[in-house]
Length: 254
Image 1: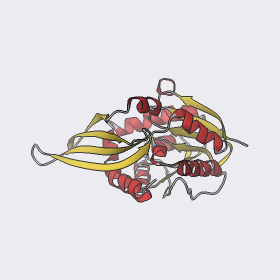
Image 2 (image 1 turned 180 degrees about the vertical axis):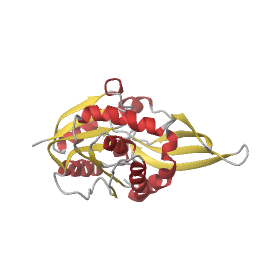
Image 3 (image 1 turned 90 degrees about the vertical axis):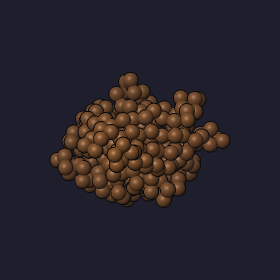
Image 4 (image 1 turned 45 degrees about the vertical axis):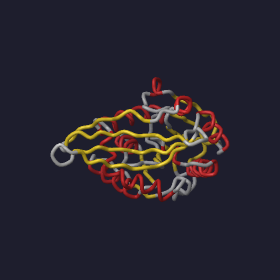
């Protein structure tokens, strides 16, 4: 992973990230309900190690869990804490690389890494390092919860774009879409992330951010997770989980 490139991408996106949702607060509640059903009754000590602006972490905190957030982007992590406070939740956050988490061993009952965040790690070494540190901060028997795009299907079809998303706020409509440029290896792809904002008059303000992702298949990720010291790895499809991406759960081996 190119640390500065990925961090710059999310630092730039953080102020506008909520605009990809038609209703961000409704998405917070919906995602917390889906993930909370997999986490189980608590309260649990939860680390969201790719918290972004707090979409999953805020909902889990509002549900009564003791949540800590960390993210490679300090801008996103700072916003997550502020958004949580504005909604009556406590969410301490830290700017941190998921490969080097600044927490003591066995500190958490649950580690969450959602929203396709793991895909920004582009090598075996980086994915292995991140999963090893997630295992380190989990207690024995603790739950790992990862979500990624459905890369088994996407690697088969290799689409050139993601469908546009439209939201609306007091400033007007915002259109978000992505162009994907697949590498020769058929596994990694560069993203051009467009947001069209209302500009002056009838004009649009176009914002473009760029990053790279690794389209890890279920088999690949299951193998990485097992090698990192997890057992009982299970995949949950959106139809069964209610979450918008496939979810992998696994337990930290004792």
